[in-house]
Image (tube, rainbow over all chains, first blue to last red; front, side):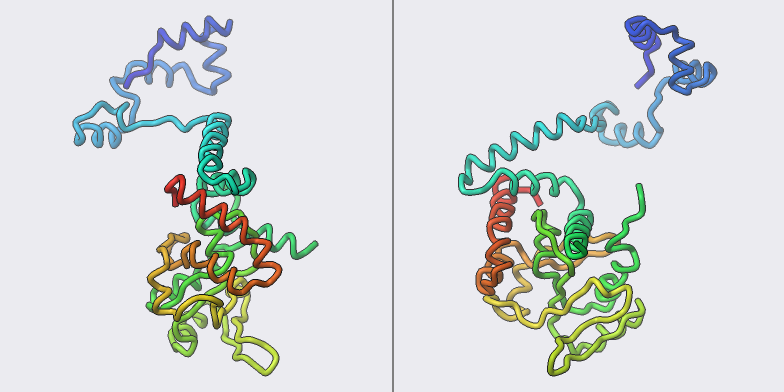
Length: 122
Length: 156
């Protein structure tokens, strides 16, 4: 995967900033920028190697974290699905369970203990 | 990420030491429910041991600077020491079968650098129903909704 200078120039123009101003605000030196656009691939060699071993394009094994709002929307839909099949369940319990299931077990336990201990102190 | 202020590495060490010594135990109660995604609050981590007289428990305690406090006429058996203060000893689980049989109703859950057996949400619900204290009755809807969520979404 390569960095597209055309795409960057187009987006800069759309935002009304020069390439130089854009690089400065992004904290990227001109040297680093021109070095990046000359590279055949900006991905780490390890990623390319894994993709090569699997016989797929590197983009096939990459994914983008959904933005927070998108994740929340997905959880609301998931909660609605659970409630449709379990009408006696409450949205609050289902929602909080789904949120906790996104965390590793140790973080779920920490939240539980933290709230339990805070509640105990008051 | 900021360092956790509760259930720190030092507190997890006791579980690791128990596992290293192959002590047979499981996490039960609301800590077990929380590990499986239940939005419940708890103050302690309840541990159910197959044999509380197992010397390896004392060895694990010694490794993390804890001690075993035997029961008296008025107090239950306890662990004492900064790194084990979060852990409570459970002697009986209302409504459940013996330790060996309930071991089949556990899930292996990763906690930090170790894995532990955790009583399933289904069996936690059975024990809470059997105990039937006011606090058990209050938490039951939350446990049941969490179980419904896990079953419907097939998430862990």
